[in-house]
Length: 550
Image (tube, rainbow, N blue to C red):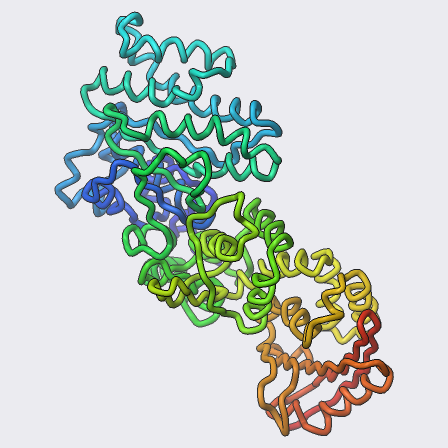
């Protein structure tokens, strides 16, 4: 039980001010030097791409609260690193336009535009009282007031496309300081439009909406956008060539999203927990630039519940990946199979993704990396090749959903099958496994070792309870799949595959091969030996439970 004197964990809270107003009671990992870098880099328009739940929104509200000229933020920044730098004097000196498009959805282009209009209206209303004494006929303010009334009346027309430009110009005229624009999760609307089937129609609006305020705007100071990826080669960025993108491969901003090893260790120590190998295996594994990064959502959740579970919840990104994997070509599928089997693979990578090109191999691999499902461990920029791996055990569980889609099997049915396997319930296991084979496509008819690869894909999320190896030397040969249980209460599992016409004979031979070649050498305790024989859609199983004493 965590002591009541421990600080509150801000799980699910991504508003910087709300966290820091109770700073004596709420735990906060200091990322404030991001403000220093934002100022010192001096980029007119910055786009930072990171996976979901890696602190993008919290950092954007931190930037908002630091610069906001209408606020007094000194108290909430007290004790943070930025206040020890020369940039501390810039606190509350700049007008800010800030909003998040997270969860901004609609079923049509018009309804999605209305959802964006609601976000913009809140920023308009924020400054309405401040502008109450200005001359509404003055050109610098007239467009602002005209658009304000239209937004209030939910009138969607050309002025919405220019609304951010009008607001920025009015703020510059009033304060004499060029405003900062912050747009969090800028790509959520375009993902929604893509999945809704109206991406091209929506992109026409969205391109103008962003371009008018970001491109060559003399009234804008700086802008920062965040999202999962840069949407390149699309109409929304066709006219924007002044955006500086910092992705997961860049050193700049690398340590500000997610927790570093030191930050993770200190946080866990505060809650009387240890950063041990089990925690590292489940939540570590990301490389942003040259820095090792832990999943912050999962670390906070683990510190709160004190249980090693999978906390990184599924979102629409998972659905987009599953959809794209099914539409991908043979080259991607072949490489995907290598990834499933080995845990890492060399690929070509395009991190500037185009939704119209998502089934393309390099673009799809880029989405996997941008979304946090894979991390780059080696890059050869001359050849544009990258070695990517599945970061940790938690993400391997996420891959179960993707593999389920890939083999066209319901994820719940797959979970039931795995549960039957780990409990040695062979009748139930075989019933579901046969259903898997029968419902699959002709994929199985033409591929060597297809069943072994697919089984590896299905069991990969069991790696936290089993040490899983494939084609590894054991006993007097190489077992197809060997699952060494990490818990004495569960049996070890060895699976051998055979293909041919006489499945009744082959299943017995597969089981006999396990015993004859002693694939269980080195294991101690109960061992479930399984021989699986296949002839296209037909499959048979033979199994035996043995006990190995030493």
